[in-house]
Length: 326
Image 1: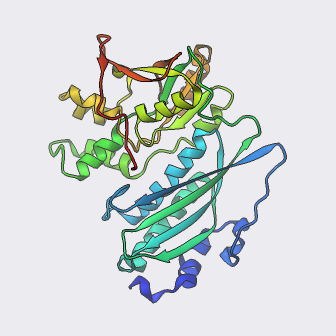
Image 2: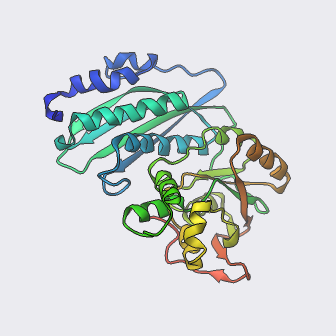
Image 3: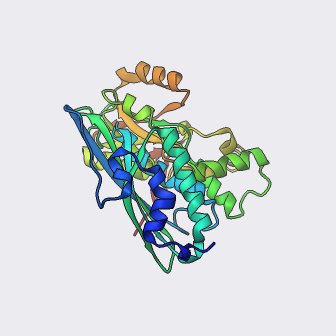
């Protein structure tokens, strides 16, 4: 069934109106209505993903939808916000068809239920290609408890949640690399690329603990560089402390020269934050409570820039610190 059989409003009625929350007004109006409790602030973020750039054109549409949603929820988590709503814009080639759109909406519905959020509205347009999907996520945080990038202080420790480099390795696998990797490890790494973990529980719990926070989207060193630049500080990172998943270790251990590449790879969507040493016990308690590894990987210092060091104290140079959009 071709997508051209449905006009814009029929698409909205069939695929997206069932996802709308009360503020979305059944998607019958051009705008939504939102309330915000006294003493709180709304946090708004927007990200787009493009076929062939941020996901592979033959990726399952339900997983594309979940990645689109989760990369935005990760931005909310990085500010300590709890997710509430989202607005969606799709620019799709006609050849994708209604079956693709139905599976895409199904994936959104699954993650809506998982994260407890609702669709408010958006727009649906056609394009000769490639597909462009844009999502604006809205969250809430207690006023004054938001965590920004500009609060890092000298002597803070640098922490990161989860594991680094899985998404890079998963994309490499989809492109034909590491053909000898065991199926279980292969599936795990690909899944981490296609459906990242948004640390929506951890982010709000770091309010009042983290001095500065960002999610790892362009690459750990690049994103830590954003914290350093806005905070007016420098950072050092110890390469050997970067947390790797068991699956990633099967790839990296035989090729240790790959490890620095993982420090610059993007699409991890883990939380990268700084906090004073006195917060270490609280962070360990959060890690245990959530079952999420949180690893100290470096330190904030006076100065500027980010430096990467090896196990013997040698400085490691990298060609570029992360993904460049332009």
